[in-house]
Length: 291
Image (cartoon, rainbow, N blue to C red):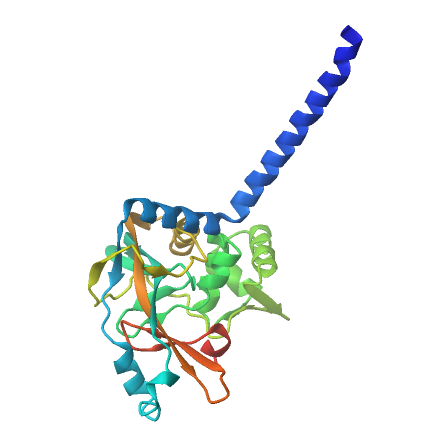
């Protein structure tokens, strides 16, 4: 009887090993898909308690946008236009304090959870350029020290100049440089290191000039864009970019209202554009934005 029990024990052990492997793989997938899990969690919580969302107040109507930007199309038959849709894009609003020129400063900054960039001014909706790549590769404090030094010197310096600027051991600097090159944040051309961005805008204060009112909107039946980045990623990068003196005192998720306007062309193709409902400006897709 004892000998017959051994195969069952062996089968049980194999089952436990398989269970542990599946659990580990599931945990890895959850970690890898963290932004998607966070999207699901936030949407689920909003659904069950019907929370209001905080959003920047809409200033322009679709009709005003069409009249200002498509004067030659206003007279078209209305059947050519599809019903405009309004979608809300998530941003992280951070209340911070930091130091500048040996003085303490306080302010707020608005960070896009879809485009990965910081808004500098809500009147013009000017943004930074380069932080999205930093989010993608999880840039560290040493990466930012190199990038900020290069940005202060027309985006390029020799290794010797960089070492003098950062005042670190050459062996440490070499390691920092290799890590930044591996992440494609910088490139080396002969004796020079240079930022690997076109028209970078990284040397900014952690401060957004906000001149728009926040209003509450019912969450029910509100279309929201999915987050590409989550709060944890943004908070970690803000700390890396602006240093240990920066303190996030409070955080809140807020939304930018965006219109999607569609028109049916004569050949039945659909022309689709997105518009910032706060500034009335067009939001260009990535393949047109930098042209």
